[in-house]
Image 1: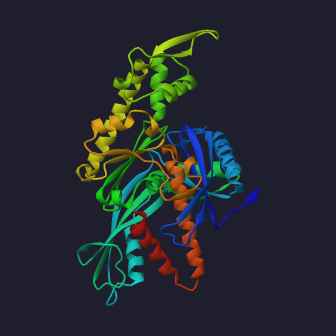
Image 2 (image 1 turned 180 degrees about the horizontal axis):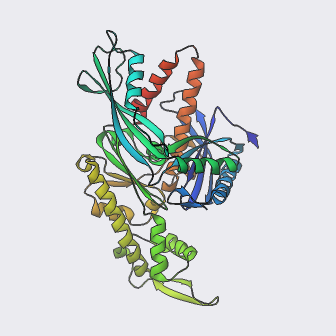
Length: 418
């Protein structure tokens, strides 16, 4: 197996509550704002030791990571050292922050932008939390808003609006330890909705307003975008495992059998099921079976999904952008593949709803990731490709001042990321 550890190869690691997935890709092109990403390999493994996106058993999580990466490496024909790793969960907090500085010269210089970023990021972060992202949203020059690149403009007062994402240091350290014990290195921890947005949202959708809803195994994540800015983040402590637990109780099934039943027979709309249709599950004894009406299963799942989607819509309204989402809702994550979930969401949300499937703009083995459950993994690979090309560009222009690199990096987040 060929060993490639840097340069053209990136790998995204998505450790979900029920499934761990890895996407390995080759980076092509030279433009870090629009990198070419060629999918080489995909790996999956059942997740152990994760509950609601938090590590509860490092050894079990380590084994899940090892299995998923090895499978992806075998498919890709290369090995990797570093993994762009997704992080999510109820511990994630986000807040806007503003910075203001006086412009020193006749026009705004890179040093002025660097100073205003430092001021905007000078927030008090508790010792048990760490900053994952500080995303520039817009600049304001002498009360003129909506400026994306203030360098060279005339003005006396420069403001910057930054969206800061923080999370639990303990959660981050446990993720890093799990990856490290599997024999790999965390290249960067990336908020999962940010990664997924790269894979399934268009720039037009982010401009006119869109809510990305990731229906995961342990949690449901909501990210609201408007005018290419990320405006709101929320995590709900319910997901696919919640449905499985309902099936366990409602149909008196073991957890593993309830999971298979949900995946094979489940739907989020009971009105689409034939009332006379039944399916077979193992009985109480080894040689026994019993018949269960599929409509009963559908009722159990619809009630829970109705509750989750209503809570999602409540979060969207709480963001203050409920009436500004021309792009509606984009559902992704494993739960987005559930039959009937798009129609159920359309019934609850007054706006367009679609399923977010990665694939647009990708090359190589695209069919391997063309499912909603790979949105985060594919997005992490895209994120990694941007970082690799940005680093290559920096090395190519090593004579430039470090402040110029910082300004370029911040500018790219603003202009291209969102």
